[in-house]
Structure formats: C-alpha cells, structure tokens
Image 1 (cartoon, rainbow, N blue to C red):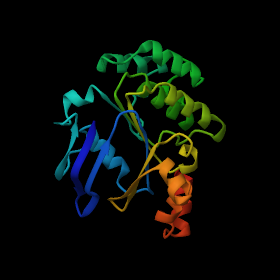
Image 2 (tube, rainbow, N blue to C red):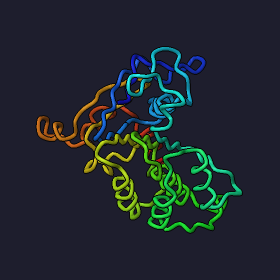
Image 3 (tube, rainbow, N blue to C red):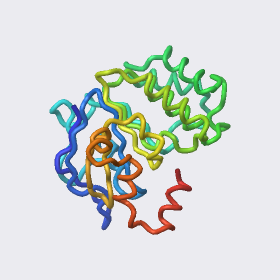
Image 4 (tube, one colour):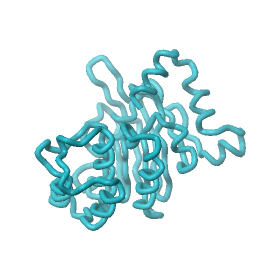
Length: 242
C-alpha cells in the first residue's frame, strides 16, 4: 500500500532519515516509536510529499507519492496549521474546499465528541483543544492511510482514551493508521505493529502480539530495551515534550 525504499533525507550536515525501507499494509494500526530526533516526523512528511528525499523514494500503490496519493493519505502534523482568525467551523470549511473525501457530517460528529464548539476561535484554543481539533479535521477525511504525528500531545490523561476511541472508530478495516508518539503505554492495547526509529535509522519492526507470545515482552519492555541507553536527562526531556 505505502512503501519507502532505501529513503534518505539530509538537512545540511544532519542526516534525518538514513536508508530506511518500510511497508505499511491496509487493515493494520502502526505505532512509530522513538525519541525526538529519530526521524519519525521527517519520514511522515516524505510519505505525503511535503519533504523531498535526497535518495530513495516513497510509493503509494506502486506509484511515487505526489498529487494523486495525497487524495488518499491524510496527514496530521505536530505544528498548528490553521489561521488564527478561523473558527472551528471555518477549519472544517477549509478542509472541505481542499479535500474531496472530507465529510462535514463526520467532522461535526467528531468536534462534538471532542467537546469543541463550532464558533470557537482557533487563536483562543488551548494546546489540548488544538490537538483535538487537528485530530477531528484529519479523521473527517475518508482516506486510506492516516498518518498522525504525536496525536496525543497536549491532551490530558483522562481525555486520551476517548480521543483514541474516536480515532479508531473513524478507521475502516481496509485502512492503515500510523501513530507517531512517545506515549508507548497508551498504544499498547490498540496497535498491531511497532516501528522503532533511532538516530535516523529503522531499528526494528515487530508485531506486538508476537512480541508478547514469543518474547514475553510488552511494547513498553521493548521500548526500554531499545532506548535504555538514553541518559536520564534525555528521557525526562522526552516525557516533558509528550
């Protein structure tokens, strides 16, 4: 469905993604895991054509990603990307103008579920409300691949279960969902496959159920095994950013 082949991205002297090959299949939920700077965001941006690789390529249904693939791949970035003057309703209208697969009916259901009012101004939203708005407008598309970069950032602990339920309810059986996050324990119960990135490299891809049965490890255990060398300061900084 979505595949990258030996893809590399370099910014100046910094290699953000280094010869990564990966396949995303329909009907599965993926967790893309790793500390900040591991290459997760750059990889997602290349998947939707927002960033051009230095070498290698991203392919959707066998064709290079581009204008056509964007019709079926929905991406939610970590950065806020709405105009400050907009209301929550305006954001929906904005997406409806750009994406043929956008459902205003679904968007209205999601913002109600997220406890957002249609007349709220973007500039007045808290970080948690903005996170909810980005999820709602992204999941209101009828896409075949959803790429959500740190979707739970800024959302309080009590609201996370409801948000994840809303995300999963919007995903069909022939759809692929990729979630980039630091909040490993939050995804343990919902993901099928874990993708571990570290220092611009793909370290490992593992099936979560097989990990439990064959290795007797949880996703959190595997995360600690791979990233346990990080200093306490680095781990603490990542926790604060999450």
